[in-house]
Length: 246
Figure 1 (cartoon, rainbow, N blue to C red):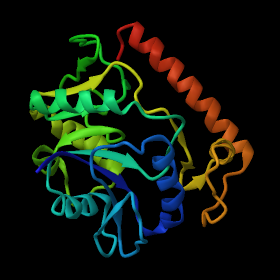
Figure 2: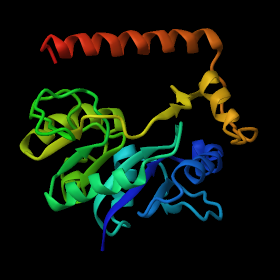
Figure 3: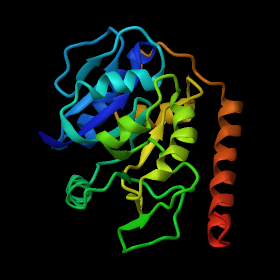
Figure 4: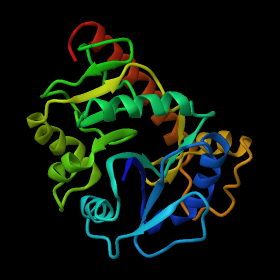
């Protein structure tokens, strides 16, 4: 049994994004040591990077994940999403060392990004996420011990439901941690199921072909509004953190 598997959460409706995403992994994380799985309803293609896990008809996000976990033989699972394209090369040695820390300490959860921020810093690398913390069980770039994740999942829930309700359910588990720094710089290609035009431009400059994407492109004004909203949200979150309000 391997210690960790990486699971890219997606579905057949976003299948046109899979090959460009594979190119992103090949460009910027081609030395990843752990198996890469990708969720699928029925579709697949011949890939040297992704292992397809077919879940059948769409019932819910949580149902898909439960079906995938039954096909994964590892103690831990880390989530990625189909719209996260790497900005630059991933530090694989650092990633491996963080995974080893998680495994050696038998942690139940390790979030591999520093937001929402925690004031419970235990050393230069890690902070503890206290019960009751907002989005305590957030999914993106998060490592879950598989037995804990199975207990947290409710078959009928969406991913957004899980991040809210699953975070409340996670309060009964003690060893939830996060790192204190950015590990995975990425472009968010999809906003509300539409292609974000500025992310598209940056990804195209990396030499990744997006010509076969079968998804609607967001208009530039909503994209600019979302960019401004995100900047303001991040700034206010930092202010609340420094003021001890979060």
